[in-house]
Length: 365
Image 1 (cartoon, one colour):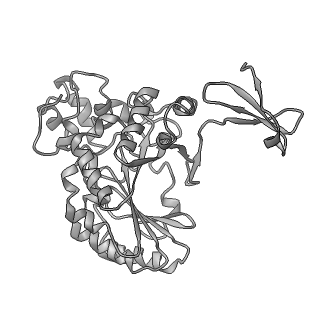
Image 2 (tube, rainbow, N blue to C red):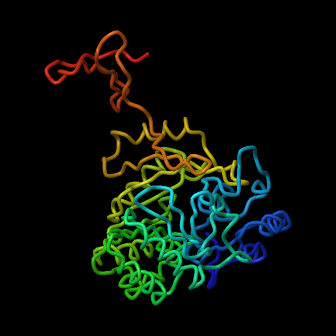
Image 3 (cartoon, rainbow, N blue to C red):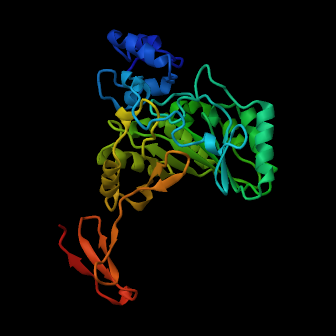
């Protein structure tokens, strides 16, 4: 593993000093870092096995020269946030919920981030007080907004005092019932999950959910588990979101271990995202066929508690669609369906009164 560091590593020279990259890579990674932000917290850096050229934690956080290779179809705003931003800080894509992007900084910067052109040093750091007030006014004015999702950047990089201010402001909006917080902090900087910060997440009359982003079971360290327990024990439910990444979690054993680790820590798997078309991320994306095959491998072999929804954010701002495998197809020439079971068997489910019919087995082609 890497040498323990006391502070975050924010440039290739610091990565070299920590023993995370060899000297011969310094020049190429400085070119990457000139375009895309770099930051590894001590907790994340300590997870990296620098002797393994395919280390799945390094692959997520250590820059790669491939990031400077932009492919056709990749875009700076791959999921179309800007097209649905009526005021600064708000993304309003779906009728009943909005994103409130409080900050544009993170404790760590993922190499596959779909907002990588918008976050990090040299970019706007956070919403101004005037912009936040305008964003809150927008939420107050739309009675259909039931849920507000705090994102960014990572909202838990904020101080408890600042977070409390935002939560109390949302608490005054009657039609907002749910506040969801998307974060990597319990994994990347677990010491930040203090009792004071957890109290700041709770506001009378609203239900708070915390959604943890993690992509590999090694990220759920003992320190991360303690941080998550502090949230859950306070009565705040936790969900997970992960990104399907080549060389990180694109095999059934690793992905299954990750989902089980979530559930063991009282975190319900929520989304497994297909990699977005962010610039310079092709080397980390799988194909959809590969993702569907992995979902089939999890189905039936892992508890239903461990099954995330595999989703694609349709480029251009058209929202998420579930893209998991299909286990049902129409029966040709008759009413009914052919259903696949988790072992690969195929079975006929016949007609509108199928409950009265015995299912028939089919041989798989």
